[in-house]
Image (cartoon, rainbow, N blue to C red; front, top):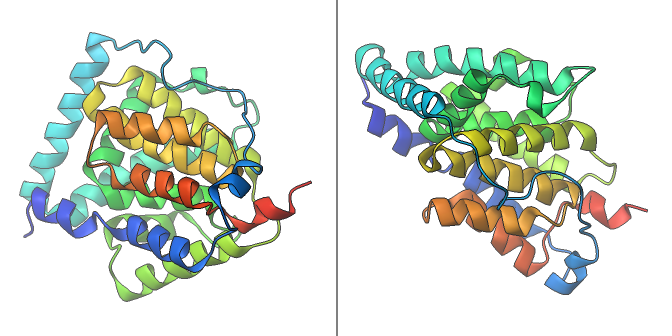
Length: 253
């Protein structure tokens, strides 16, 4: 039975490696050029006042400790699968809601989202895939596979293939859906302690980068301020500075 730390180490590079590979293979030229593709959109600002309720801080710590205990007692696969199923159900419901408002997202569920993204990077990556992968190619079971068995040959190859296909697509993605995910992550980062805010901000910066939102740079930098080892945010910063962006942005009117 693997330990909590072993599970974290095993899962920590899945999405990061795929992004780095994509960035090496595709570029639109220079940072100046990519700057013309990115426009500021309305939403939260990373330096807005954060409201951290003591109850939410305690809730996050309890969820974190409970996950570690289940990893030790049941193994990381079962513990991650159980937690991911709950969080992903809420996440998908928010993304698909007709009357979506990030302020309607319950604090306890936002805490669960932030803690899962922090404790299981493979789960974080699976949630990113729900935003950028084609909407007709997945169901909940596919997302769970990315979260629980990210390095299984079929899952790893599929994630790389679909991420590359989405990155090189000329047709625009579902921008509204991606920006909903961004808003959810920003809202989560506003209410959780620093230790659990960096990963939601990194995911938000990823969604901003993917949609050409100029706040990507500031949001990624804020994630790194909270966690100097935040590799995902560092990759987004590098992509922005090197002028790398999803190719659909080149064809945007």
